Length: 140
Image (cartoon, rainbow, N blue to C red; front, side):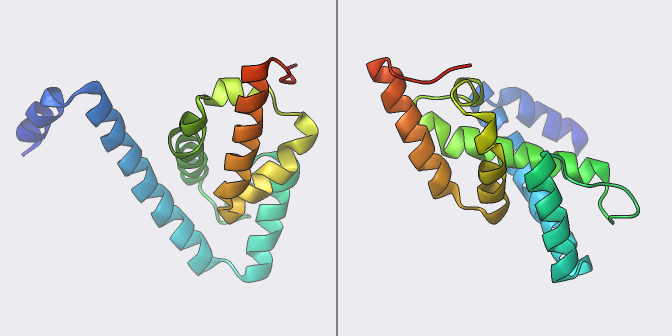
């Protein structure tokens, strides 16, 4: 069965391979988030999300009940979602987007990501894309 999977993967285009990889990250992230919600009280969830908003890092380890690999998968899935489903629509990449984001805005953006409020990113990306187009974009 593995040989057949390898043959099938070799026949995929780069775009199809990227889509397959993204779908796998999303599946794994969803499982991790479901486990997190099922094993942590609302107060624990809020504490961990608040720490993420403040620091940009998901608290991991036995004390927090979060595996570092799971945290990395969730972060990757969020980044991929932002890149693929938001920024590309506005002609941006993660790199070009963050060139124009003030670090003071990071906590608010992390909170929006944690809540799944992707409309915040759409509006922000649209403003950045417009500013880049007319030459008035802020950049570090």
